[in-house]
Every structure is written in structure tokens, then in C-alpha cells.
Image (cartoon, rainbow, N blue to C red; front, top):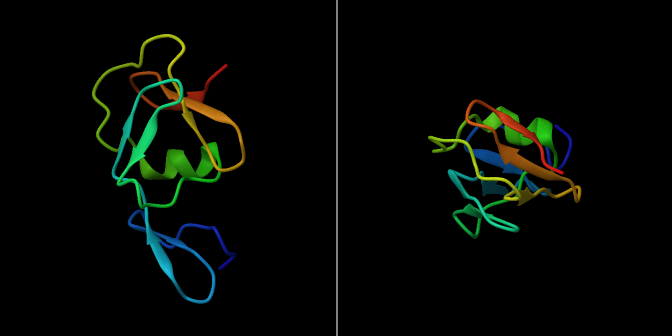
Amino acid sequence: MVDGAFKSKETFKEGAGFYAAAPTGATQGTPGSFTPGSGKVPNSLTELRALGAIGQTGAWTGGNYVLLGDGSRARWDGDSWEVAP
């Protein structure tokens, strides 16, 4: 497995066999944040989408996003994670 890739929904590979917790939630903001704060931030939209809704119940309001590890932005549109402007 490549470093930084998902092992499962619960973990990310973090080199040398260490696995950091995958996020279990996200809070909208400018930028928003992932919970737990000690978890590994998804590196890309693909990785974030693999986690599913992670607790989201409604669409995020305009301008809110989370910052991903590759520097891109994502927002929850009510059904899925999408690229945020």
C-alpha cells in the first residue's frame, strides 16, 4: 500500500506501519475542520469521498469548505463531497 492511502474507512497508512485515525466528522467553516483533530486529513477528494458522509446531514451553506491535504477544497452538497470554489 502506498503511504497516505486508505487502509480502510477507519485508518490511513502513515509510513513505517503506523496508522492514524481517519476522520469521523467534518464541521463546515472557512475553512472547516475534521474530527477528531488528531486524525489524518484526507489527501484528496477521492479519499474524502471514500469516507462517505462522515456525519453530514444537510448541505453546507455557500462559501464553507474543508481544506484537503493536497491543498484543494471540498464541500458537502447534501448528498456527496464536491469540489468547493
